[in-house]
Length: 210
Image (cartoon, helix red, strand yellow):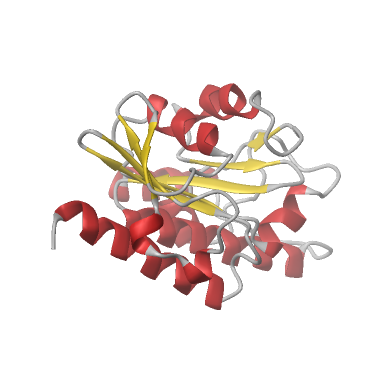
């Protein structure tokens, strides 16, 4: 099996796992992987639970569609992340329930949407900024994500969902899972006093784990 075909199989496998655990529904959500000479992206209108590896979209180094089905109409979200993050090998975007719910809350801090509730959230997600609302498919979302991507590998689109980049496909998926689980915890605790990690504890984690 060629390296590209192996990536196609892995995208399909992770997509199915995310779908079966209801981290994405219907035809929502998309996954991409950066290759040496372009990208693989899940097709527009496809379900992550039923991806055909052979039909996953192929884009060349200039972002032109060269094979497979037409790529996700949210390609620009992924490209905004990749342009600003040389270390990003994969990007995952979902409409995961708890993360979307947090993105709809009034009064959240747009510079840091979820407080540092756990060490693993700090290690895998870090600081999560909120991208202002744009209608689905609005090309202005690309520059809005790009403006934050140089400092953050995860962002939350208002009334829409998270976008997460990783140094590997596994890293991106695991960070997305950690984000969704922490969003769920945040909603469970939302009306109660909380004790997030202190700035000193956060700084220690960042110094130790990067």
